Image (cartoon, rainbow, N blue to C red; front, top):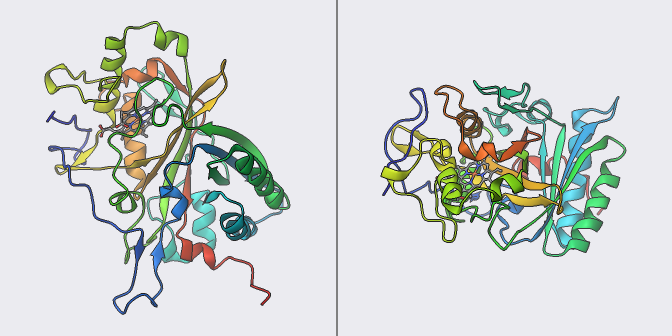
Length: 341
Ligand code: HEM
């Protein structure tokens, strides 16, 4: 097994930890299933949906964070039961912290406030919005119709700032042609990686990084497959990690593996392809129980600290970036409209 390339500072040292964590996406009290569970939003883990729509919204003047949360939550029930899609909702971390109980907000979550600039000037722009709603399904029409319903339902309190349509390219590849997700935790491990554990502040909630990366496909395709593999740190046909003695320190894998005291710090990625023939890229959708992991991966990709910039960033350019709190189901449910019955 290749030695993992560790991050800067005292948080990232040691060797690869392969076991992952053993979190659950539903946790029950000791007395059994009648106790209040703590559940991450299920759409985070609903793999296999081929069609995606990401809607970023901003509060209208005069509307409050509570209005925003109530409007979003009122959509979740109807759309997820009869709409034929998954809807995952996230909020500007400060808005959620403002309206939630103190024990229902992830402690690490905060807005992306300033551009991230590497030592050579490479810049990841901060484009934070107030809400992020992700509609996903197996059918383009259902995603389109429900996306329109989301925007209409939110219209009294928030306006659409950006919409991004995404899809699964060749089942599991991104638009570089590489398999994307090989090192993702399995569905048994993912809830423990993506969401805070039961009994801790923010239990069942998650931090998501949503970031659009535009690909310079002609530039990428102008280099050889071997050069592409060096940039990625894995082989192209079958996603085998390059051996330690040939793994470049600036490969994407080298820059995104994080270890703390010998334990690898995983995230759960749901990236998809976005765009059309002339303008396209990767919608990076990364969930974590701890925002630091996502921030540190971005810093390392930009070369902050050691000056080693991720080779992939010579071919892909970040256009946007924002962090959102994705609350637990139970925390959200407290904002649901009262059942008339
Ligand atoms: C255009 C943007 C990106 C593309 C095309 C891309 C693509 C890939 C590919 C092909 C892999 C190797 C296979 C795999 O393990 O999934 C990978 C690994 C990974 N990427 Fe990215 N990625 C992008 C951006 C990012 C960003 C912004 C982050 C973090 C904030 C990130 C985090 C990771 C992590 C954690 C791994 C697994 C590393 C390992 O444990 O070996 N990626 N990515």
